[in-house]
Length: 490
Image (cartoon, rainbow, N blue to C red; front, top):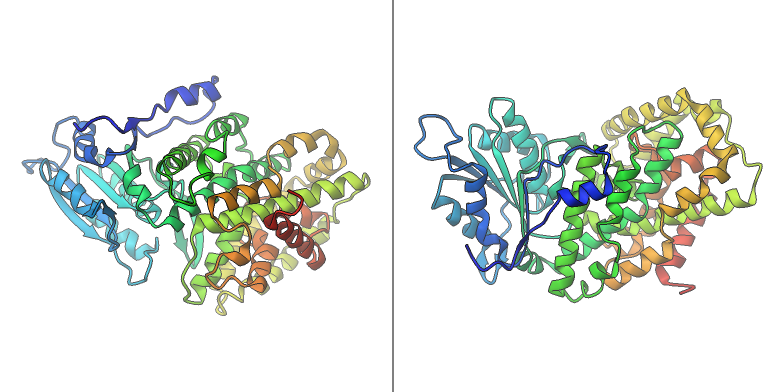
């Protein structure tokens, strides 16, 4: 074993401290290995997890291991990371390497690729996925599907960038009918994150990872809001408490990231890994995915529908978090000034026919065949039905706003604070700075219609129920977010 410059991150003590009652689900990750030189123990980790025994078909002399990768070359000090990992595995196991390629410049998690990956891992003792968040998501789905045929393969993920937090949870983001959806998959048994490898990843990917981090500053408020109106009964304050322990000091992840400082990259890698675990033990991605993620998904839908490159998810989330925080601030300000605020009549607010027309009109822009619109309507209509069923809870929330205001405020950071952290990390703080053809008009479309794509209740839904999500209201939120991004008032 190499000199121990890496560390096996203890997970259970964090869980016990945040959740002494044991109300959260258990974490399926047995080993979280972080730090320099971690890449050197991939083969040993797989061997240890297999217990030194055979896990493949009985007629095999040695365990069979599937190596899942994409075509992108990943380097570590000039060496090919995928070749390094394959060499370690080949010294211990029978290795089959599958290069997943859908013909696009970036791999997508679509049915054809998932089927190919599932066939590649079926009957194997272990699966090692090397690459970014897309390969991780594919591997988790493939292992889950292959597990239906018998004993599940051991999954080890080798993380090569700090761009997302999805390496360490038990869900995957897939593209279904042109729409991104989060689906259950499986936990990896181990995640190996060599911070030397991650530091060599394109700087924009790691900066985007900090953008992903900022959703913890807005999404918990949306999750709590959804629980108050009866749209999501999964809310658990212990998950929020665990989340607060992930990165209490944002500066440790943002400062130095712009220049690729190894310590900043290592701090970000650890924080993202623990964030992913929070999602898994909470049993829902809602803890870290609110309006800011909906905005990012809207941009992805538009670009995919028009054959344009999809932007970095985390960078979009970061800019979306500034918008989401601005929407919360507008809500707080207006409710503070209008003690007699009233929600729209249920017939107007939740009318299915009106809702369907809005969805079709919004997503015709993405796909003239309306396939994307129909997929979004299936999710959005479920949200309308859930809110209509307990509409009295929405009324109670508004009428007794003072009872909930402080708790909700504590779960969302000011837009200026989020924007300042993004700027320090070198990550876009406004949607118009994202590139990837995100002009002001497209950004406005994504923000205005983000609530229509998914069965997830956020601050945007409440603003809509109050009649405060018309054109002028959207413009006000965008203006607030622009001021925050510019650092006015700092």
